Image (cartoon, rainbow, N blue to C red):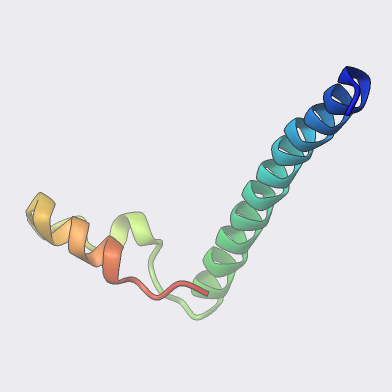
Length: 71
């Protein structure tokens, strides 16, 4: 395989990976915004205010994050 073809393949994969990551981040942000709007429509407090008075350990926060349902 010539070096020009190798350089083209490497460039396509590199920039393809960057674009894939950017689109994934855009998807996550839009999903988060939609969840916030739905929560607000149901009358629930924002997630930042929901447990503000509770004192939680770092371990509790970690396990809540790990076990949270992902869609």
